[in-house]
Length: 169
Image 1 (cartoon, rainbow, N blue to C red):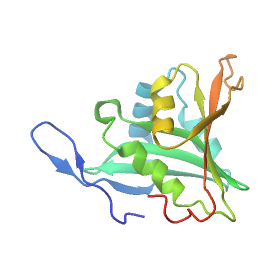
Image 2: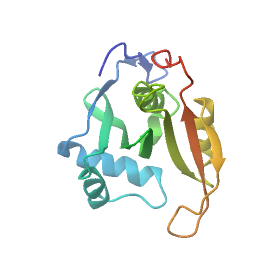
Image 3: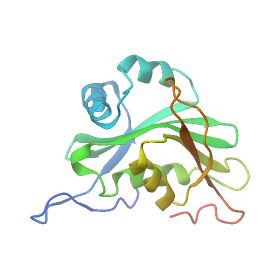
């Protein structure tokens, strides 16, 4: 899972670190809940993560920098689609490519025969995430009332084109 990880510049003094992508583990709980609380108005609690990950089609990965979780994603394999259920990067190190690492990892699972698309539902007021997904080639397709409080959201979809599988990065 760690093939050719980019080097990430973390500070103005030129410090660089190689991020490590790995599966989420229980020991990550505190850091994940901290990032989640700093990232969302209505954050998931640990029961939400645990309940989601009990589904055999749901998986979670983290990006570590210097042995500390810096970002994570939770996704579900649904037929021909991979659905990003939750993705967050620690606020103090955003815009350094960590979210891209997680999404590109999922793009690598796509092919033109089996898994054809990657999707994410984004809250209407989460413009940062909207710009993020657009920059990665996702297209907003519909605006469902997805969130429990009646808030609207956008469904962003990335589709693999015939012959593009394996050339996504």
